[in-house]
Image 1 (tube, one colour):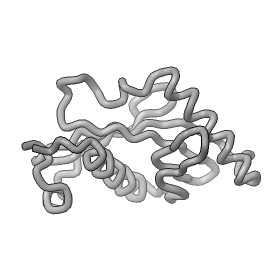
Image 2: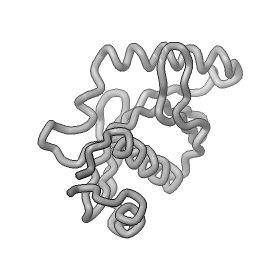
Image 3: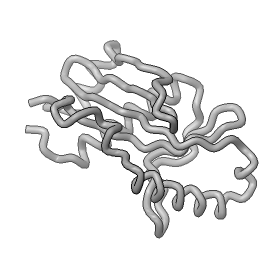
Length: 143
């Protein structure tokens, strides 16, 4: 059984990075941590920086993954962003976004859904061609 939530989370972060790179984003940081908390991925594209929370599940039985990002989690992310911008003063002039990448893992495919801070669906992608990669690296995903 695939019971280790950290392994599932890492798999989701890996899928999210692949997704972002395929769509032209540059990964600035993964698992950026400060005393206020952590941001899973910080990525940029053109004149924008995205502070991305990844949420990964093996099924929708507990609801959509992004539903677990509540008001308090967003407030915590904002504090981490403030600290990141304090450390990286030149980036504050860019457009800043908090986003969620919602991942549903299965042995058949990985589905990535990028959601904006307003919770609008921006993109949806099924990684059918990467099925073998995910099964090889994240064994027993849906057992």
